[in-house]
Length: 407
Image (cartoon, rainbow, N blue to C red; front, side, top):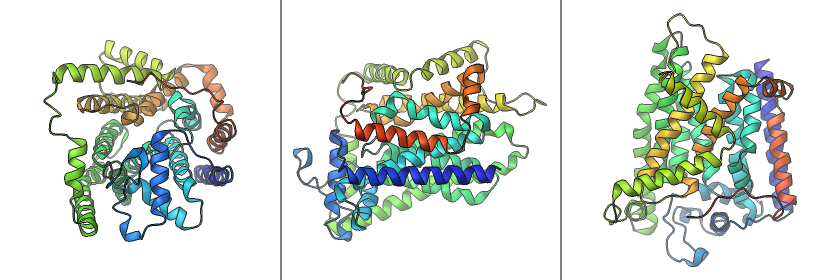
């Protein structure tokens, strides 16, 4: 039955993405978001360039800039460029591929939730599509869903690797995918995967089987070094310049730590992010915070079950909530130290907190739990995704936008 549900969900997601890609091309969709216009434009321009030059894209006048584009590696551009070479309209290719990453993200959410709370997995796959942040990024060409999909693939593979070592390949694929899309931001992958193993260890009847997951974590820095060195060599071969040197100057300017008080800046940035962590997963963020506060009052700091305690949906749900909240706190704290801030930098955090809060609500609310049971069909998340995309495509500029104030 589980295999049949998984196949049904996969078919629903494939169909939803195929229809989305066809519609994006049919209506010649283009976002008004500057980041999306940049990524879509560079991807479309690469279609006309020799493949060996793809590793070194230019700004080509976008954002009124010229010269080499070294803000991030080229992972975000290559797949849309390949789709454009295959005959899909190049200006829309980045939007179609981003919709694929988006569909993959919500499908992986459902799979991960099914490892903890199977009866609420479909509901979580639907609820997260209705977060305010999901409306902001519904049909875009940004990097955020590519990063989220890679992160979730690594987490899901980590859980599977605990009993099937072959899934270590999925862990490394997720990590390297994020590395090639977002560069140094890939640090969040081993952090999240390590916390996932810690949160899941109590439910493992044979803890020594976790060796494969820990091995995958240990291999991530090695794989990252290999990919980075190979990328640098290829870039130098094409341009004669060092990508890493240019990239470092973009991500860590010389005066990063010299301007103003570091503690004051970190405190301000942390508060700035905290406000967004409350709003973008709203209202589920309130449930997550209330549950976390209750655990702190009771002194329950760890997800481990008491000796002899059986595994059930409640204990598994607590493991998931602990993982989501702790991972969100670690990532938010880390990004608060950085010299730059942006809503999108902590994009995965909004979904982690949303999942934690929604999970708590599903366990505590009988009405919400009954509704989740009625919607417990494998095709429902894919159908909801397609419906929301259709609303966006045919109501562009008229749907409410859940935006935040600008800094």
